[in-house]
Image (cartoon, rainbow, N blue to C red; front, side):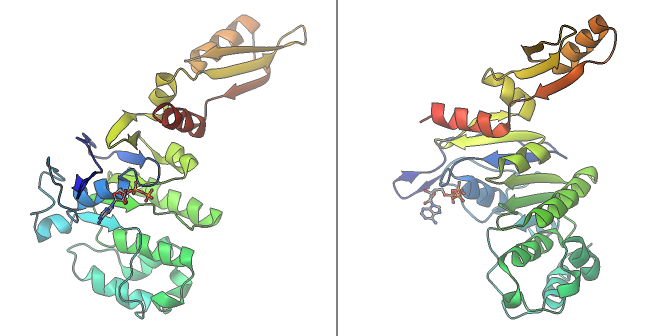
Amino acid sequence: MSYGQHDVLKGLDLTVEKGQLFVLLGPNGAGKTTTIEIMEGYAKPTGGSASVLGSDPLTAGDAWRDQVGIVMQSWADHASWRLDTLLGDIASYYSDPYPTAELLELVGLGEHRRRRLNQLSGGQRRRMDVALGLVGHPRVLFLDEPTAGFDPQARADFHRVISGLKSEGVTIVLTTHDLQEAERLADRIGILLGGVIHTDSTPAELAQSIGQRTQVSWTAKDGARRTEATDDPDTLVHELMTSNGGPLTGLRIDRPSLEEIYMDIVEAAR
Ligand SMILES: Nc1ncnc2c1ncn2[C@@H]1O[C@H](COP(=O)(O)OP(=O)(O)OP(=O)(O)O)[C@@H](O)[C@H]1O
């Protein structure tokens, strides 16, 4: 995918399985939005192809749009519309929409339903963006930085909504700069660097791939602190407890954080 002379994506290869939550990470300008826009049918790739729910997003029709939810970086239209009116209007384009009142409650905007879009704070507006993406009960959901500007409560509410959608089998592609959020939600994480998916793996595989091991520490019977590094903390803790004949005192398990792993990968690719 190029814009003029600028090659943004260079043979990016990405598959997201049904029911998966795929988190796309990468520095500013890496091409995350561009990738999502190609999958949504909003950008025409200069090479290669995309298939979503078995159709080319560029030519897919209304039946396809009915199944796809999109949360873009910002919804600028209809600024003077009231929330319930706007949501109800958009809902009417879908065959099986969420009831407006229920959806506004779900995203924490129930009490503001009669406000106008341009009377909302930045974070409330983002909640409305999420509602607009969900309104059609999508089977596939694209979320481009959905939690930018969310306060911790809104973020936790959003994570609950996403977990609910996951349990309904919705396939989700999400971009974020919040690595804790990625760690919490992702089935798979792709890191976009230099125009390709540099890494595509589960959070646990990601840690192993760069040799970051989990540190298990405990207080031994002689009172000294002991630490062991392992790729398999579950088995190690089981073995230690068996040889100890019971629970370990002061047990601590430190898994490498996604933040450390991500920074390592991005630094190494520079
Ligand atoms: N319409 C456009 N015309 C020209 N260049 C563009 C256009 N849209 C995006 N780009 C360029 O493509 C590159 C990738 O942009 P994109 O928005 O996909 O990145 P991103 O990974 O989503 O970044 P961020 O994390 O900052 O949102 C950037 O260098 C950007 O300047």
